[in-house]
Length: 191
Image (tube, one colour):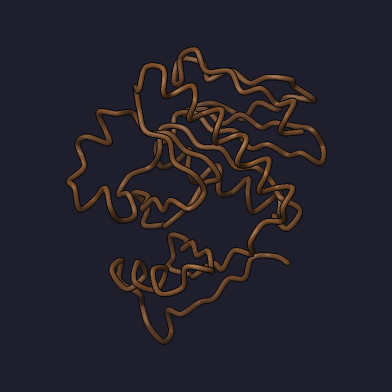
């Protein structure tokens, strides 16, 4: 099952509050919203993808627990990007200073910022082209580092701010570089 895109704009333009309430009223559905306001209904992942994503997020969370330089988020977290899109990457990390700059209310809702680091794990129902566009959107909105992990081809696309995309074939690890200093993702459990 692929994601469904619904254009509500001819009938209603959802405010940020209405979109938030729609998501809260339908906790079993995963919604995103693109920059033009179209509603994207994401299918749930299968067990294998969900397990791999949990492993990825846990590796990031365990690394972050050492120095607590930021906050780690899973795929259920919504981010309101500067371009107006509402997105939920599979894993994300935000520097602690940026998190602390948010009000208590902002911290409890969709976060009004683009993460410093994001990961998208391509699932069988995801379109590579659409996910690549989403990665460029994160990059254009300020993500300093992003990984698009394609389990099927065992490729990783690395997105860095102001740089061309780098493609790695069959890597065994990924470095958090200077964004996530000391973080190394072990891909053995992800493949």
